[in-house]
Length: 284
Image 1: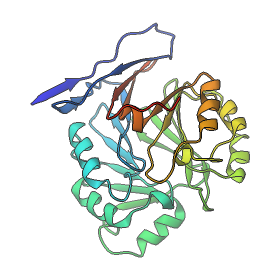
Image 2: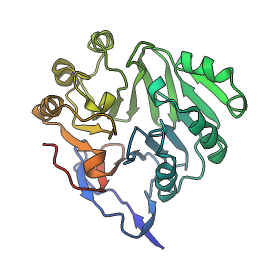
Image 3: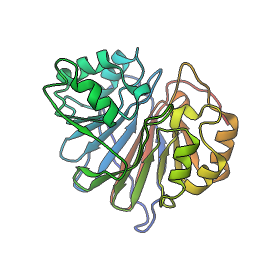
């Protein structure tokens, strides 16, 4: 068995700009992130369809945000196995389009999920179902909700819309690093977000696979992220205008379809990006 040990490089102490390294999965069966105190890793999973983000702390705790597409359960399990995930303490479902009840019913017992977080509407729906949803703690996130997910990592909900193409839009603050995981794509939500302090975003998870009209140039310029992440969809292709607008802000754009699984390892002051390509395609 081959194990890949990921050790972040040392950067200038006051710099928050990281570097990128690329690896081929090959015969690597396990990935050891080698997380120490005051370090976390956020991994955007390179599934064939849908969104799934894995957050890991130095204490071995794992948090999963969404579970990929409806037909990606096997791929999800394989990647979680590579990242040595045996249990998931918290599972977050950000919108109805990311809700696959049959998939959840398998994941919750398989990974011994203790807590499920979602919109109030999704929580109410799941409470009316049978086990395993009745056997775990369920928590609704509303706009303004703040919560420490793991040590040193705080989540803040900026929006929790229930309209079409809306859901939970939230930030993660880890020391000087700020991640913005955006789900919604509506004019109403964008106007609300433009009133929020979003001028220090390190990592931006782009909503709705960057499909046409899902994100305005105005909001992109307002967020002005260092790195942007685009998940793959079987149904939608990224809008070239959105990609151009992201690159125009000097954001480095990563696509799970092009770069595969993307892991970002954070220390208090720095970060490093590791990619595991699955195929070569040029979106630039």
